[in-house]
Image (cartoon, rainbow, N blue to C red):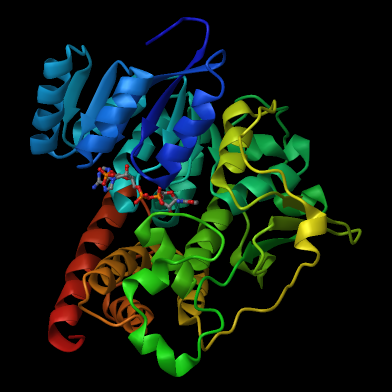
Length: 411
Ligand SMILES: NC(=O)c1ccc[n+]([C@@H]2O[C@H](COP(=O)([O-])OP(=O)(O)OC[C@H]3O[C@@H](n4cnc5c(N)ncnc54)[C@H](OP(=O)(O)O)[C@@H]3O)[C@@H](O)[C@H]2O)c1
């Protein structure tokens, strides 16, 4: 329902973990936000409940059968909400509806709708990290060209964003709302490095010889965060931190050697920025995505998120350590991909999506995920170019290669 006074939000991937948290924050501020459009893939029951509560103008269910099922439910209840299906419909809501678009689809499936959102010239909140891994520089440039205000929702990148000098933020958001600075080089802002923190996931202390028998439920049982299954497995392998490294390079215009990964099991410091004078600025908060969502939704202002306040007295101490390379080989793969650039990050991302799905389906053991990704990266031809067509072709070929490897030698 559009009120004319409140900000319209289009939420891509509303039925997932980020989507549900975003709607929770929105529901706390009916005086500020209303929902214009929602999208999901197949989850009709959650989408129906969300539509009853938020009354959007339009819904996209990517799966056509699910779109029909949802339409029938609306008819039965006398609800007048447009339902469309297919990936193209996702792009049209991203482009046409809402002053704020939240990209919360999981995986490369969100690439084209992210591009459509970024072309819109509106405010875009991006959680969907895989498109930034595949085509980050292109997406950031597109945001600048279209004066789109691009804000990170990933808690680490949102933390880094909050710790950057105010005058530099235009680099990230295309000059949408901040003071535009002439100098887009992060090194000229007195920044020495970015400290990207990660918890180390649920398997940080499991004996290495037990990794082969880890079940999907064990890998998804993150000690601090409630997330979708794909990112939960990525956190257990620390590929998530590898993807975030590449995401940070694109968003903040830095090379991978300016980013240090630090394991911080409490997940309270969400990342830090170190300056040349020795100051380190950190953003802290409860491990609850609503903190980052509220911060980006209201930026440059502040709104309540609903997250439990952080009690430093209860936490009592912070731990930090270097990541263990033998336990987390995915980190090395991501560092190589970031260094190499071109289509290698997209190849790695595609292989990882196939490998994680194979693990969740019981086709491979946990310890084979990184190996399968590595073999795919070795076999695939890396291209220097990273325009949209080249990257889409690399993504497609890497998925085929990875599936071939899966059939030939990994089962
Ligand atoms: N969860 C977190 O705390 C967190 C934190 C930082 C960053 N992120 C990033 O945010 C993104 C979403 O993560 P999540 O944990 O919220 O994932 P999730 O819980 O698995 O939700 C994914 C959403 O995407 C939709 N979707 C799945 N496949 C699709 C397809 N082929 N086409 C269109 N829509 C599709 C799902 O619809 P259905 O429900 O119908 O399947 C759902 O709405 C990921 O890129 C993740 O890395 C997540």
